[in-house]
Amino acid sequence: MSIQDGPGDLGADEPARLRPWLPLLACPRCHGRLDDATAPLRCPRCRHALRIDRGVIVAVDLEHLSPHLRSQVAHFEHERAALDDRYVLLPWQRRYLERWLSAAGPAEAGAVALDCGTGTGYMAIELARRGARVIACDLTLASLVRLVRIAEAEGVADRVLAVCCTADELPVRDGVVASFIANGLLEHVPDQDAMLRACARVCAADATLMLTVPLRLGLVHPLLALVHWGRDRQIGHLRRYDLATLRRVLDGWTLLDARFTGHLGKALRVLANLSGLGRFDEEQLERIDDPHQHHERGASNVVSFWRRGRA
Ligand SMILES: [Zn+2]
Image (cartoon, rainbow, N blue to C red):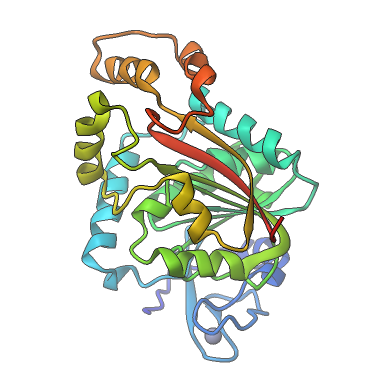
C-alpha cells in the first residue's frame, strides 16, 4: 500500500470529521482498532496504513487489483463519468428504498448501515437522510468522491462515510452493523464466500440484510435470456442465482421477504426506453410487474431481505 502525501490527504477539518467514525472502523488486514484520526490512518497492531483521498478512506491497494476487479473499476468509472453531481432519486431507486423500509422498518437514529457496492450512493443518501449512519463502500473511487460531494450538498455529510475497499476486506469492526445492503454486488464478487464471511463478521447478531441479485438464466423469460447473457458479459457478472441457492449460501440468516422483479412486460418496456424506441412512464413501470412479484419463474432479479439468526 502506497501512502500518498499532499492534497489527497487529510484536510484541516478531516480529523474532526473522522473521529466519530473510528469506533466503527478496523484494519482491513488484522481487524485491529484504528484509534487515531491522523493521516494516513495507521493500524497500531500491524502498521497497515489507509490513505484518505478527497474525503474517502482508501482501504484497498488500487494499483494491484486482479484483472477482473480492474476491469470492473474501469467499467464503473466509465459509467460514472457520464454523471454530474446533481442528486436525483430515480423511480426504480425509490422503489428499492421503499422495499427496504417496508421489510426492515425505519432506520433508528444513529443505527449503522453498511451499503456495500454503493454505486451512485442513493441508498446511502436516503438512509442517512432518515437518521442512519452509513458506511458507503465501493471499489470505484470516482463514485465515492462524487458521493462525498453529494452528501455535503444534501446536508448528510456527517452521516455518510465513503470507503474504497473490496467487499471481502471491509475496514469495519466486528458486529457493529445493524443493516447490511448489497444490491447488485454478489454477482460481481470473485469470492462470494469471502464476501459473505465479511458481511457476517461486521453484522450485529440481529442485523438485517438486503440482497439483490440477478436470477439464473433458466428462470428468466426465454425472450430475455439472450439480453441477460450479453449484459452479464458487458457488466462483468460472474454468476446468477435462484432463491434456493441464496438460502443455502445464507445459512445462518432467515428469509424475511423476497420480491421477483423484471418480468417480461416490464423488461421489454425498460429496454424500449433504454433504446429510445419507447417512452414508457418510469413511475408506472415500477408497478407493472407487481402482480408477479412472488413468481420466481420469468423474472430477472430477486430482491431479498434477511434477518440474522435461524427462525
Ligand atoms: Zn492491522
